[in-house]
Image 1 (cartoon, protein in one colour):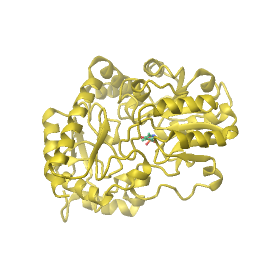
Image 2: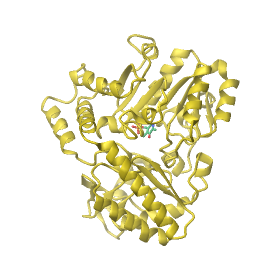
Image 3: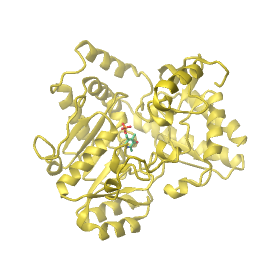
Image 4: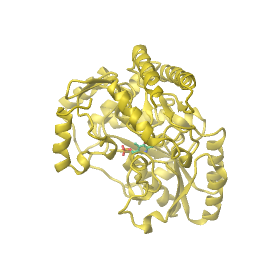
Length: 425
Ligand SMILES: *Cc1c(COP(=O)(O)O)cnc(C)c1O
């Protein structure tokens, strides 16, 4: 992919002059320069220099069915014929809300917004309004988007770039954000009990997806549910990655734990900008116009997003997408483990369902352990994979995503590339 005068390189040089950092989201600023995409279909993404890659980044999660899925494309195209922004309610809003609340019985009511960040921001505000309390507890390395309350020890690009605590966020805001390590119920319990009088909510990814995939230990989520319930703290599951991925009903279905509120994003919009927040009726009734927690958006309930979301739900309901992906994911993880042990490396594989990752070190159980992995060794490996036509997310701290569009031969190519490129590590 690297060359002296590629079009991607030229575009990046140009971009750096007029777009801050050259990119619209920091994780895309792959050095020395990122490839610029021309098109993507199914499991493949093509750059402007004519290179094609098998894509295991999949837009960082939304494209569960692969790129340009024909049924989603058709749904968006039909919507375009009817206009694409109304500023009024529309039938598809009701339809998609029904599908989502059917899949997530914990959500009596919901609201559509335009991004995962907006969803978690609104969920936290609603929980604060409902409880009349200020503090929230998040998990170290948890990523919930980029609004002020959650940019403390945040995962995703914030961790990759070594900027987990953002400048520009007043201490007056972050002092209300407490942190506990994942998989450590004692720390969480202690913090909740100590701050009981002012603790509004716990927000967490039930499976951590933004510092690898890190799975919850047995019973951890049930214990979190118990301690939050006992202390009248709103439990928010941020299922922006796990929603519609681990199962139709997300991690809460998979692990059989019922939160008070849920945030969704990524898959639920079929690749169009989306966020959803929802939960118990008495909590969601706090939101304007019914209640006094203000929340609004010009692009909320976007017609093209709703169409793409409904088409996605239809495919998920009608085909055996989750079973297929869960099975293929298990195969990939087990083959990767074999490859690692054959190569005599002390690396470990982690993941669940369509999420997988080789950690250059021991598979972490929390944020502090993730930081011990060989980040720069991983980045070199990422580049070798790219040269071999495999596009993985460019960081040790981002999950690889398998999609429904990946064929058995795509997977075989992936495994072959791991085998030859891990050896050079
Ligand atoms: C991606 C992500 C977000 C933020 O969603 P955006 O649409 O990028 O704003 C929030 N929470 C989790 C768990 C995510 O993975």
